[in-house]
Every structure is written in C-alpha cells, then in structure tokens.
Image (cartoon, rainbow, N blue to C red):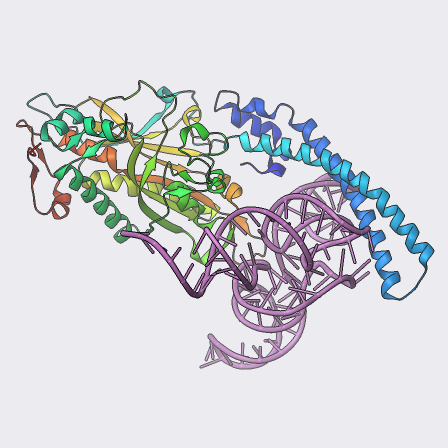
Length: 433
RNA sequence: GGAGAGAUGGCCGAGAGGCUGAAGGCGGCGGUUUGCUAAACCGUUAUAGGGCCAAAAGCUCUAUCGAGGGUUCGAAUCCCUCUCUCUCCGCCA
C-alpha cells in the first residue's frame, strides 16, 4: 500500500510511475483529488461535532466534581449533547463511507516501480542482467523431466491424480529423497553461509496476514481457503515469514533480519488451465525454501542484490546454468518495486524457466502489515523495507537436476554437493514399480 | 468439547463511570557528574487521522486500553458478541 500523504503530495509522479506498469493502474487514481477533498471535509465536520460533545461533557463533569448543583445548567448541557448525538451519527456514516472508498482505492494500487526497473508491458521486455554457466552438450537428445522421472519410477502422476487430482505429484524412493536432500542442502547453505535464521512457520495463515503481504483482497482466486474458517493455505512462505513481525516495532540494531523456511506452497492456479499441464512445472502444491529480509530503507537495494546472490549461490553450487532477468514494469508483481527472476536452463525443454523470484517491496508490505523499526536517536518509528526471494523453488530445482544431470542410459547423476545428502548414492537408477 | 481466569504504551504493570493518553518501573533518547566504562541524578519519550501554516517547526482537534456492537450527558472502567492467551477436566498425534 502506498502512503496517502505521499500520493496526495506527489500525485502526478505517482500516476506517471503507475502508468509504467501498463494496464489501468494509473486510472485507479482518477477521482483521487475529489475523493480526498470530500473525505477530509467529512472528517473535519465529524470531529468538530465530537469536539463540542467532549467539551460539553467535561463541563458537566466540572459541575459534578465541584458539587455545584446547578440543575438548570446541567440539564441544558445534557440537552445539547443529546442533539449533537444525531449529528455525530449522521456525520460518522458519511465519513466512514468515504474512508472506506479511499482505503479501497489505496489497497488496489500496486507498488511503484523503482527507477532501475526497465520499461515494458510483458515478459518480452524483461532485461537479461547476466548469465551463469554453460548448458551441457548432450550426445543424445535430453528428455523432459516427466519422462525421465516416470521411466525411473521416481515420479508418479497417475497415482497423484487418483488420490488428489490434476497438478499433483507423488515422488518415490530416490525421487522423494532428492527433494529432501535439496531442501536440507539449501537450508544448510542459507543458515551456515548466508546468515539466515531457520524458521518453521504455520502453513495456514489468516486473512490479515494475506492482506499484509498483498495477496488479499485482490488475488483471492489464487488461494486455497478452508471453508468456514479464517484459515488459508499459504501460497508461499513469504506470507507467514513477512508477517512474523506484523504490528511490531523492531530495534534498528536488529536489522537486517534474515529468515529462511522450507514449506509447501499451495496455489489454486485459477486461470492457468492448459498451461504447463505436463510435469512438475505448475502444481497445486510444491515445496520451496524461501528467503525473507527486513531491512532499513537505505540498505534495501544493496540487500536486494545480496539476497539475489544467495539464491544464485544455490544454482551455482548445483552447477545449473541460469540467467538473471530484471523484470520490466509491466511484469512486476503487485507488491514489488523491483524483481529479479532467476531462470534455470532446462535442456529437456530447451528453455530457461523461472526458478526464483527475488523482490524488493520497499515499504509497501511493511505499511500494510505495520512492520516498523526505530532508527537510532529518532523517536518516530519508520516502516522497514521487506524483501523476499525463493532460494529456491525446490520442485523446480528437482526437475532442473533431473533434466540437466540425466544420462544416456536413463539414470540421473547426483550433483557433487548433494552426495552427502543422498546417502552416498552417486546416481538415481531405475526403481521397482 | 466442558469449567474458569485474563488481554492496558517498545516491554512490565496500576487504574474498576468524569481533566486518565493513561500512575510506577524497565528500555530508548538528551543532559549533569566522571581518567574510560559502569553507576547515580535530572529531563524527555505512543500511534494514526484532521485543522491552522506555502512547507517544516509549532499549535490545536479527533480517535485509539484485544476486535466489533450497546448502555450513558460522559466508558480503559458497565452490558453483549467475537478473537486470542493461560489454568483445570475430557479427547487426541
């Protein structure tokens, strides 16, 4: 959410920046000035009625406290306050309607793209920042992971469909172990080398948390909701992790705070029917190691680079070739001011696919979730900046390993760094069905 | 699921219809003292939204004592509903 005062004072600039996102983002502000004027007028009216009521009430209190039994004066005051009551009720209704309208506008406005975000309206305008690693030369035609996985007997979509439906997978044997190995490897790296605290958060959160990170109210359709309760399955660990410090004031000395968690992520994938229907790319449930940082505003862009590097370090250790994309304004998520996508090379499909998304939200989420810190020597708390990124999406890392490390005989070699996590087995051989 | 207790500022904790935005303490900040540190002492220290102001500062108003309603001229305080926490009983991985 943007700051009301900021929007008011910089309306032209805000509209201009929103326009960079394309769509109708800037149009949301069309009636802003008029609404703002009417809202303030209503508040001002309401408050003057309340002011008079409070003043009269304290006059009554003075009479009573001083034991002045001036019944007539007291009666007159009480009469006047009774009258004010109806004015207050009327004013209150009007002010609250206008307030709600203003909140609705502010809540719908996406974050402003940072100046270093390229202009553009679709993924085609994303800018490649760098590329790491060289795609391996195969002396056979590499297969997509679903073929490799099913032939090895470690991936089972049929039974997943039976027990859950489309967009679910069952992993068997070394496949299941590979997922666990990747998760442990990533968590170890981030906690031991990159200074993140490991967290195991709830996988269900309430509506307030989803509002805090920006999934609600706008993106309800992407979420799974438990009927009849305020419990929602998390679409990413970003939600519980970022909300750890909701409604708190942090000490500047604590910053930056870096946390990581391995969790499942649940996504309804409404509106993506027919997209990525084969394989593990797009599932209703996948696991992810998430990185979240709470930082002082001056450091957020520096920390954004670091966080991105932490996610890259996983790909580098696994020797998976990738490229880093600076998302253009039109491709930016609702809450993000700037995002780098990491795209891993998938030889079975001959494409680079997103495997991590590292974003700086500046104060956008902090304002919604009320996460503040007290700068040293300053009494007024300020909003922190929040950042997050996948470090990495374990499901997609799994399939990237399968595709990049497949061998002519159908087996899959285990990346060097994972050997200790795989119980010493150097390759995945066919499993009994 | 049953029975009870509770939720107050950054934190702890008093207050039980009327100058109470809220005592006291801790912490923070500023200062005095001091070889340095520590201690002691003094002062200061909530948030949001309006108004005045070109703006900042400042002044002023309104709201906020878990959330939402209600009673009352007036609610942190009384009533109702909800949420959460704790204790005991039952059940349970």
